[in-house]
Image (cartoon, rainbow, N blue to C red; front, side):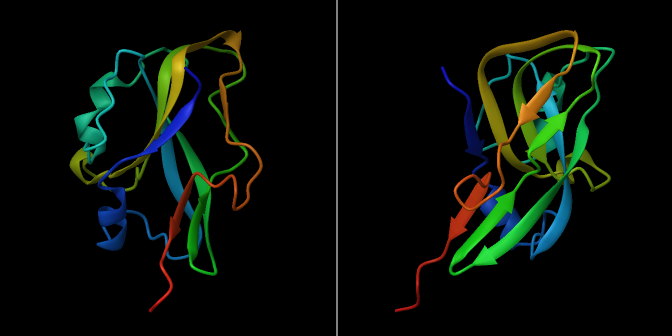
Length: 152
């Protein structure tokens, strides 16, 4: 299975109701955490507290903060990630998923989920660089795109 990105079902509602980082434009901080391959993806999960037990626990690992850019063009809202997210140059890590979430709130129940990358299989590094490559930033490569219908 190839890598795939899924958006959590509650993300649009959490975004519109102000329960997630202010994504009204410009740059914002989100977190990326790695999950074990044994994690069972459930699109109705809402917050970090529901899935954090599946976070990997390798000694070299810690979740990383990324800066995303939010932009608007015509009727589209784009959430663009940096070109990559590195978890270290000499780390030993095995993961099956990467989850993107709002890590700013104080409690896990308020740390809302954005999306998850399914690697399709376990990905590993042994004393090497574990990196997620999001690719070139642009409208066709944004990690999330909302499109509004034109008014009638």
